[in-house]
Length: 356
Image 1 (cartoon, rainbow, N blue to C red):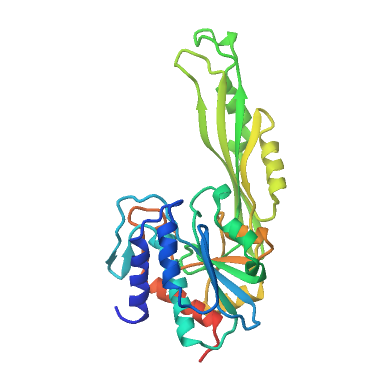
Image 2: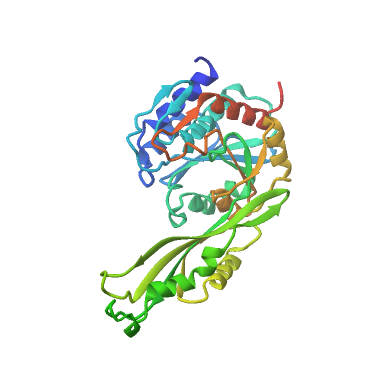
């Protein structure tokens, strides 16, 4: 490898080899801040993340955003090169994308090309944790320049497709109460598990709900993901506790999603544990169209929740686009193809800068 592919591969490997499981990002944030220290412009760095915004030209601000944290290691750090790929923890989700962001910031600072948009570069932590521990939300709340963002490109693994919108993500706990008794005389008690079976019947029977927005089909799904009950094989359980996960389409608000889950489970004591809203579909946004055309990108719905929703909470249009492979994210053999890194870099360069 030489040139751009070598730089991207080496930068990815460099980031992989810095331990940064969620909640332990201090060292990698310090490292990246040092790498980007020479880039001209406004810079902000703290325990949540790093933002660099080169001097503005008056063009629309587009923020390239990536998270530096990873899921726990699975014997896959340090990383290595293998058959045209970088293999190791976080390569696909999403240190390869972070390498693209860093290398594009360095290249633009050196080359000073004619701009089509103003680029900002945002790297943050704690994305792989529950949304209540988000590092992005406090950054959005306290950095005024981010409010000027015309489009955020969240570089989640999308296999170099443009994925717009995202599903909302609601998790609820429902408790079904009963009365304990000897299992030889169940009529003397009330079986909480049986109550749960009846109470969850509507969820179990529910088919995915297709929702088409701007020509893209999202699939809304509700799943029972945990059930806990019982203390012994000869005791009728007096309590069954269940978790339900609702991935809801962008046509619902969080309040509507909560109302829907209560409609599906009218019995039992239901408590919403978390409810992260969806992101609107912005496939027809002018800058989204420009990005699509710059890379000849396929446009797809995002059948998951991603930080585009956190940008949306602040009124910022956001899309998902990155070089990582969704099939390899979070796996022990996680990998990113170097050719995919190069394609993402070239697509963003054509998008952000005028042709020479």
